[in-house]
Length: 263
Image (cartoon, rainbow, N blue to C red; front, side, top):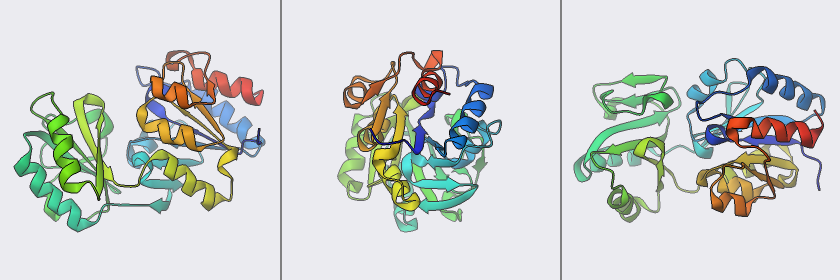
């Protein structure tokens, strides 16, 4: 087994418990001890960077954030990699999503903020830096992801529409809160860690990654040591090299770090 140089972890269902809390003091202590061993600590999430920065404001020593499911990598507050949606595609999709789907809400995640024309029915937990604008077409920003909610629970038809009309440019995935995330094609956490590996000159075999859900699957498969949470989806459990002894509600990530690195 190669010596681990990077630890990457998902948040919801992984580092955080079901109430979206984590042991701040213990994590900060472990990051400090990992740094003493020259190991980088990375958060890999589907959330936007602004949200990640805010929820981890009590943990300032996180080395890197992989945001937007891999579309953006931020180090020390500076973007070192991004793969945004072309503005022409964004404008075309705003038009067709509104005309072709029975939308309850639509928001676009950008580098500066998350934008919507109304706050009504938005999954607000993930949108701390939300800007309500009169016209999405007029927003000047770099865009990474759409989030839509429908007036009904059947999301299949919307996914099929998106795959049929935009399959070469984006991929759509059901996310929490009964909504659909629409991201640029060829983006996932595994591809992002591959990019990070090249940027830092650290082989993938020297990266350890924790995850629980299907959007963590690629990074679990890609790295040298893929760790599934005890509470992970069956596909993630099957793809992993290691499974935590405790779940996300009982510090599964922190306990594994303590044991593996003798912290």
